[in-house]
Image (cartoon, rainbow, N blue to C red; front, side, top):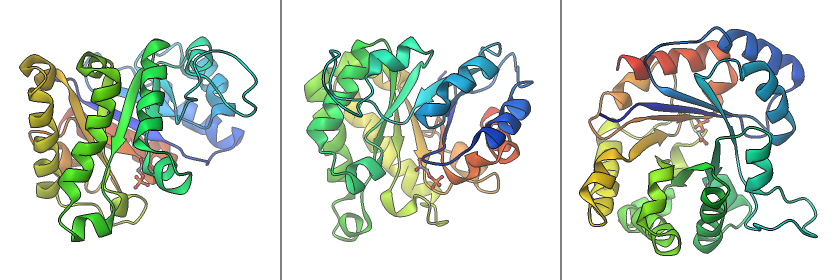
Length: 253
Ligand code: PGA
């Protein structure tokens, strides 16, 4: 049985006042079972969450990105995976489509970040997903599996033991138009099959989640799919009540 996984990606949103109300709402969340929950605020706020949420082992902290650089050095503006681990992060998102498309991150850089994360003892939320044009051209599966392959080639399949894959079609992110549950199931099935080539046990234990306009209203339709092990939530995660509603849906899809 794979434990469901729900992560909040705040992107570049949030201020201390919002964080306080979020911590107040999530602080009392201590289920004895239920999904693994990860909150990924902007880096300046990680410490705040480490202090206010850490008594609750039910919620782990994640960052939204990390450097490809593994050794300390003259890399102005970069934040290493080791630094994130040092301040209490357990997870880091790598390869989010906003990093790939807005900031030009290549598959090779994503793979290097994935390796840096795992080397620092972090677990990675590896985002993969196709654009609208790629889907229209019938290349969705090739693109998504290619993104996975570049990480597998660089890091080796065993590194997936420290990862969750988030399938996030680019066109569904922040658009209010999620993929259909069937399309998500198809792609996630293809991802799991691709991992099976590297080991059945690995594929069966790997959690693959969906992201892209997930809300409390539509979460259950994704979470009810056999291949979907949870959600990566952007916009709806900025509201603690909405995020908790999605967490609860993952508990009882
Ligand atoms: P969204 O973002 O839920 O706002 O679509 C998801 C994501 O970017 O991870």
